[in-house]
Length: 240
Image 1 (spheres, helix red, strand yellow):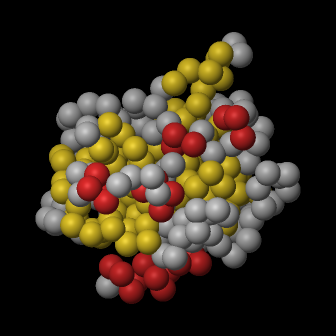
Image 2 (image 1 turned 120 degrees about the vertical axis):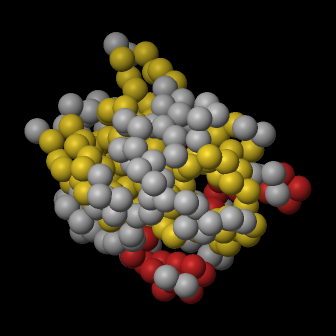
């Protein structure tokens, strides 16, 4: 079985229920790799030509000097390569983030220069989703369990079919938080921070990855910041 996902870029994306899949170039043109010293530190999504949506906890241990050195790489599926377009950051906004309980784990990055859209670089609109709904997670840092061995395959962009839930011991959905469980034996790790959660029917961005599964074990829910709760804040910052 598969789910057809239509993004604002007009791309048709199929996420198979067979588990985690590698993304094809241009399949998720709204995804960006946020890097420091050319190393991937977080994932983000393009919401306007000047603004990237991600999570705040990615930056809690980065010094103010290194914040100036962050770069956003668009138009690539390789979190380790140099094939994308690098952009400098002008401004970082966070919504009263509390690192102790991950409340308001959301951030917006303003780029110094406007992105030029093409088949590899596009924006995605923000939307909402209910519980017990199929969703597609996209990002770097996913964990694949193969014959009991955890493999680090974070260099390539991947997508994973999930189900929104509220019955997991480690994660409870609420007005600001959304939990989802992988439908197969794969899961999301903390290295996938900022990864996108997309509602496949509307093709809208509904969450950004806040907390990976405990110990990266499959079967546990993953926590996403619920973007519908921050629509007004996003609109205010980006003037959408």
